[in-house]
Image (cartoon, rainbow, N blue to C red; front, side, top):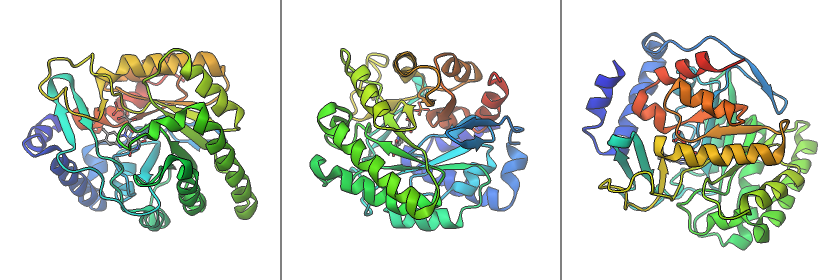
Length: 337
Ligand SMILES: Cc1cc2nc3c(=O)[nH]c(=O)nc-3n(C[C@H](O)[C@H](O)[C@H](O)COP(=O)(O)O)c2cc1C
């Protein structure tokens, strides 16, 4: 059934297909059809970071950047939904085309560039959201904000989303905002995280509730840079990690006509790099520290492999596009308890 739907959607330009599919899902969710077409999985609860996730499969950031589709995503059976990345003010993102399919590899390349309606719009959506699962808010910086002032953008977004979400994801790993990944390195990271954890302390006092804060990292690392970054993140009092964002590496898709496109590669060609980063991170941070694994999950086996490499929870994006919503159920069922 989804294969047939996908064939139709893939006749459209990728970003158009994305919009059409989400609009269709919104209507189907409202009519109660989505749950009939794609029966959600039964619960498989997991407790992590002081939160109860009804199942370990989440929607990765970037698919619902503005929180406009929370109901539909919830109806598909996700245990948690990460909305964003959102920035303080609306921004258009990069010029189109900026999303490319690599069907032979079941992969995507995107250079969206944090196109979003701004944090105030997201907050309004969160206030009206009908979803009984966990919601994470993924925050970033405006394209035009210099790195030296990036902390102000992150704080601005965190202040606004804090009362309306369950956890906060700090995105310093998108390859599509110039220099953003420099925030992953010592020069910027220590200061940034000191500011963010201090702000979280103040918000905890103000709102009387502690929101876990996780950092999302890239899969592209040289030498022992990953180890150094992880030590900084853990020592800063951050609650966990999301590993990983998309890759700028193209070695797994060489010769594909779209391989030259600038941006981040996602889907199965990202798995080995993403899994290696996850496994390395797990070795460095020990067994107790929370890690959400993401990158290249397109089957129940790939989900289980994330668990074996050290993930406590997982997220999917590209797998949902190629395999359809049935993937959520398959992953939940296969997840070892
Ligand atoms: C079109 C597209 C847009 C994305 N936008 C974001 C984003 O705004 N913020 C973010 O943290 N990750 C973003 N991502 C990365 C995903 O959240 C995820 O980390 C990555 O795609 C790897 O997972 P996958 O192989 O299951 O897609 C985006 C991915 C895609 C394909």
